[in-house]
Image 1: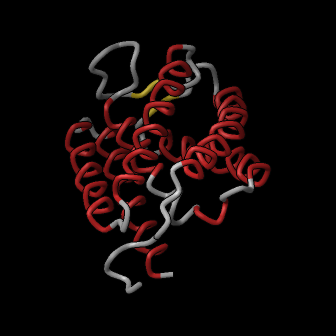
Image 2: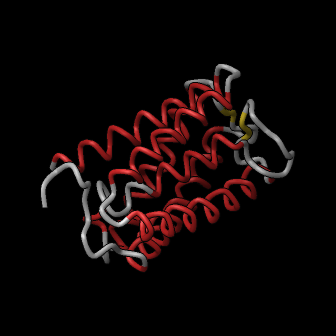
Length: 180
């Protein structure tokens, strides 16, 4: 339980740092804070090598998928682009952050891909809606269209992320600071 709470706290702090950094015109500051929180997570992991593999694979996949969606106009981020056809760096950091949940706070989804699809279809659009409301993105083709596309995307990407997490599952989950 303590591990789950700490994992969620690290993720949520990283998410807000990245989104607010992007929304307020300080994308590198937000991304830096998110990376520091990621390093704290990795330092606490019992099996950091397996965690790093999961985090990197999911982050590359998510960055590529979000870049395609952004290119197609599903959403546009308001700051931090370093290459026009790739999402801002702070979005990639958010994908790194998201992947840290797979062996911890979302570990209970392991092998439950239909449930992951259902939850992804709800949670993914909610996160983007919140980011849009905080001023980090816009939906140029309309909110309804974007949220519908995001629901379909997250119904696919969350189970795929869980599958990737299952592939690199650590033998000893948890953080070092919370006993055996």
